[in-house]
Length: 261
Image 1 (cartoon, helix red, strand yellow):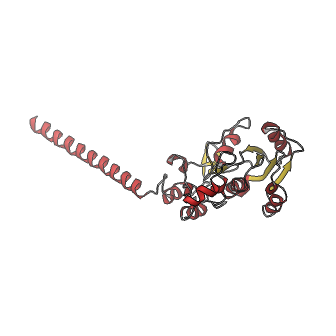
Image 2 (image 1 turned 180 degrees about the horizontal axis):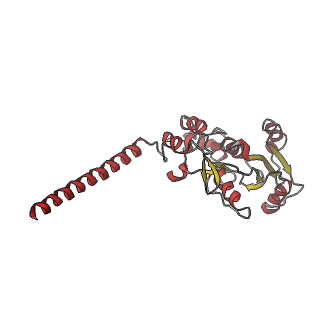
Image 3 (image 1 turned 90 degrees about the vertical axis):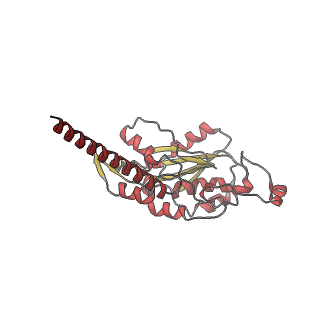
């Protein structure tokens, strides 16, 4: 009896030791993967490995909407304001150009690339999620009044650059009776190169809500998305919003993936 008890005790100790080693190995592997990941979340290779294929879940086809080529390109960029970093002003710039418009320093904004890179601020788990493969397209409506040139254009470029082209039906810029010269003919001429962008103008000051409604009335997309005129769309910002609406057409979704200029 004692021999049998000793034998069972040894087997139990061996199993406990094996389980402990397995757990330690798992923790070590997890830490190693974390150490290999770039700042800001899950490594790009891991994201691609998990999300490469489309899957069928609850009868709905899901897919990975990330543009990995664009993500790699952004990650390699350096320069003023790239990766969302602050722009360092020299002493001379502080003396000569330290003015503020629209709640931010337009002097600094004008010296940052219109298509600058941004850090991916999402939770790591969000980077691995799949969304409905058949999403509706959207009309993105951007009201503005006397907006700075670079901040307005950076908003437009961020939407175009970080959205799947098939999901952007159009971008509607609604000018609420601006009187700045750069928002007249120069803006019209610039937007000619961006065929998905069109400009509507009010005949008098209407305010934010009426200006949005004017854009909504002219929208041709299946979904309407409202954005401020001085924000930047971040990585894969649009599919999660449209996914909620695809699941329930009565949904109204707040966007938490934009970064303010």
